Amino acid sequence: MRKALCTAVATLMLWACGGANGGDTAPSKQEGLSLSAEAGSTGGSFVHGGGEVTFSSREVEPGVYRLEVRLRGMTLTGLMDPASGVSTLDGFADGSATDTQLGDADRELLAALYGALSAELPVGDAAAPEAMYLRRAVSLWSQNPDSVELKRSVLGEQGRGYTMLCSYTKCNGRQTGSCGGVYNWYSYAKHDCNKGSFSYAGNQQIAQLGDHASCGGDEYYLNGSTWVCGEPDHWSRPKVMGNCFGRCGGDCGGDTQYTLDATNHDGCVRNGHMLVSGYCDDQFVSATDDELFAPNCY
Image (cartoon, rainbow, N blue to C red; front, side, top):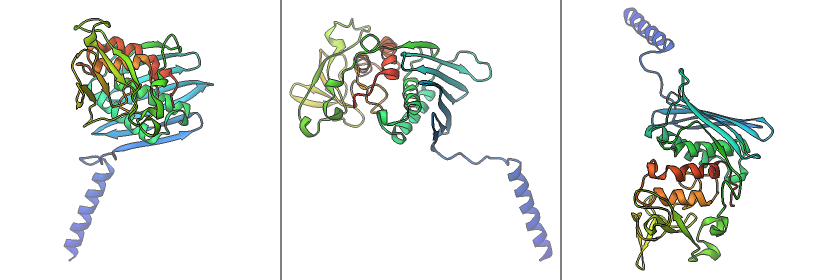
């Protein structure tokens, strides 16, 4: 009995020492969002699919916000001054501080963080300003193509930098209540690419802006008199709806800005191109100030 007890105690001590010194494997971090907030400051961390993001946004002077997002060996920063419509964005590799770029895995992790922030934070202006601008910047970075530099200045001014399209999103952007079955088409969501210029009918879509019917993560387009699930590839001015068309940000996020440039960017990436397509870079850059500074429609 004594030998067995001593053996058990020795085994327990070895296990305890191994745990105290880190052992062979560290406990995995819990998936999900951890968020903390106080007056003028929002921060936290996010774990998703084995990746981790830490983030902070704080008011450094009245109406001016400094953002920092760290993930996968890089740091993304932003200094936003919404009142003057000016922001500076940057991204660099940790350690060397050299310029870097986002890859698909980075964008996927940031998109997941954006979804978590949108689910946790109040919608639109109900969120604290530092939290709202953090959410907007994370959304912007989650869509940043490889070919668009992270280090840049963004200037935005309503009527010059961005044009609001709130009037096309009645009933909070949904076909419910008095808006049920009522269409309010915007002509046109358009882009330029290897197919032609902005004036080419195949680069234009007639869009129903707002969060309307969607199918399996896709949208609907009108084929003759029938609504079909999918995305037409450079058809001549098809009517399309679904998935918050014209709304700044990925999917139907936490802000409700509908703008001309965001509509054109949607009209590019949903018309035969992908999110990171070089043909849509100019539309993405044009919509950057919209996403960061445009007011919410509802």
